[in-house]
Image (cartoon, rainbow, N blue to C red; front, side, top):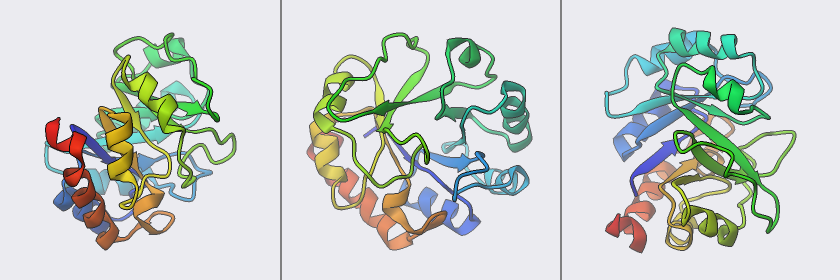
Length: 209
């Protein structure tokens, strides 16, 4: 498995635990309506402690492009993850690489071909209110079909208990986990973090990637 992102980081100790477990990236949610929201100033303090090998990614939902780019510069983010109705024009205005969340509704394949190869597609559960962190899984058959065509990050209800099967079935480029390793929204369970990475490394596909 080339990429494992732990999202919804709000505390330094959780960031440190995720890094120690082997995270490739940490996600910081800057959408004020999220229960995992973090102030940019606090996120900057955490990001300043990260090793160069770990990418800090900011999560946004339909926020003005100049606001997003301002937070990118303030915090020192390496990429942005967009969970709203942002279009290609919006993506072109970003100053960092873009991960675009695409909602998978039931067994229907979402439209992803309009996103250029430079944009990394993240597959998540369709939820017009919470925009992620729902704890529900996507249709892994649909996700697998998409993963055969382009690199994707798989999200949606991944836990230490199911991540091995998810990786084996979907064969994604990476995974994004939030609620599956939490004690409560924004507070990570360090035991579950460790268990998640043990399951990732133990999966058949991950050992061959």
